[in-house]
Image 1 (cartoon, rainbow, N blue to C red):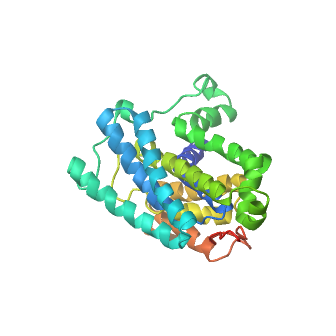
Image 2 (cartoon, rainbow, N blue to C red):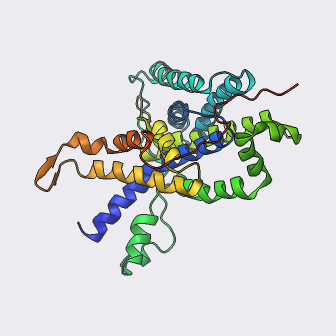
Length: 321
């Protein structure tokens, strides 16, 4: 494989890693505040459907993005009410959100478009277009650096660059601001935060809403940038892969970027090499396509070292009288 072929695989990896990165950062904020959220999949799916539906009706992808974020925020609010206000089981609430989104997207999609749960194909202003960075074409002939800039860094939709910028922004918010310090403290020792006069409920709701916004962007990216419309179950387990990446990253933003790029690379390799011979042994296509999910199982089985979650994670906070 030549240098340009490698760049094409890395370019595909970046595109495929973007929804994982956004969902991983969403789970990062939520779990750092002590709210486990396995409903990332459902929020992404709801956002993907609503963003594609509104973009199809209006022809405006930005309205679609806003609609997708609102759909995700609604499910995030349901999760927050169930797990924070009513102190319900956070895992059960997340599972319920996944089932709710999986069923509603198909039912509403069939009612609106009568296409078996799909939306019409999006085109033109109803999709996010690729952006050519400044001087990308001029730099193409520069050895090594030019092709990397022109073929790998340039030519993505705006949501890819937003996702990459959110990594340092998330790190700064969590580790360099008062809000981030309190958010992390809520996930470790909510009683101490409450004693200091800071609202535990308010901080946890803020984290859940941030999670909803990021999942909304991830879902909208799936339907209006990576694809050209919504299809049934198009999130394809990405929410669960994002959770595995979050554990792999040990709940840190920069590690999350590396973990999701690894998952994206495996998916890109599976798409690129449909048939592969390794030392004369043919590798089945199904194995290549299953690589990201195999890695998910390996990570969740605990083969990546000890990953310690926030101590108060998954536990509803009961204010002492």
